[in-house]
Image (cartoon, rainbow, N blue to C red; front, side, top):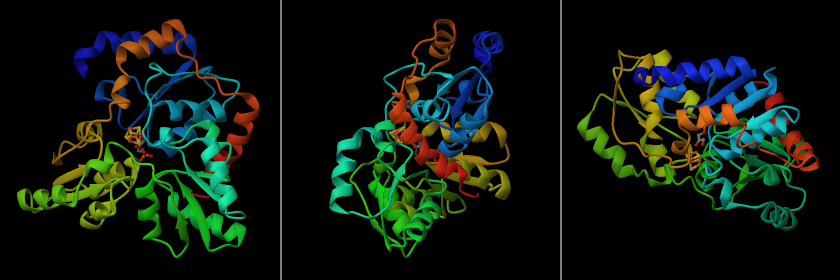
Length: 307
Ligand code: 13P
Ligand code: SF4
């Protein structure tokens, strides 16, 4: 990524001039993640940083739902997404009208919504969660509402993986991450044969059979922490491809092997379009204020839960 030094220097100078910060997700390419990201991390970490930054402009190096979350948390700041087409198969799997129908069908049950959703969907929600805190949030919601069932939408696999870790019953939706749904238990078996000593970490958006066969399941930040603290000699990260590239730069003592899948939405963000966003102010993310206020309650409730 050091080959991109001139563009990285230009972006870093523009950030200072415009009082901007770049919030970069773990799936950004290494030149973005290591070169220009002011805050890097998982969905939960980036939402927390958005809530506390005093910058004037936030450039979201991630996908559109992440930029909307930043705007919902910081209505007075300018939030830019370098490419408006950076979507997400989970966010596009469900609408606000769908959530209203689910609530009619299950009156009185709390609605927990994965952050990988539009602001319109978050506005219909009681509390958000990420893959880092989904079990904790579901159990909190069941306690607060005094119920034994919780609606957890829209990721079908995250819902099943949470259900396997709690006594709370889960009502799910049929959304899927197009990157993680493609991993199979066969991929893990091949890895075990090829690298018997490798530790296998998988993201909770993967199918249940994959998580059952893996050694550890966690959000992108949890995988990163695992490598930093356990220092495995060899590791497989069952997730998006840039994740291993980014973590490998900080941990030269660990060998990263195995399959990965690219997220075409994340890969729409480039150094070039980040530079253009800072130069031109495009593309500004707008969320209608009344809707943003409702969505904020759900996101803020999640942020305010104790770690
Ligand atoms: P986390 O970074 O919160 O684990 O989410 C992964 C993801 O798929 C975001 O698009
Ligand atoms: Fe959405 Fe999956 Fe891409 Fe994340 S990796 S943005 S969940 S499609």
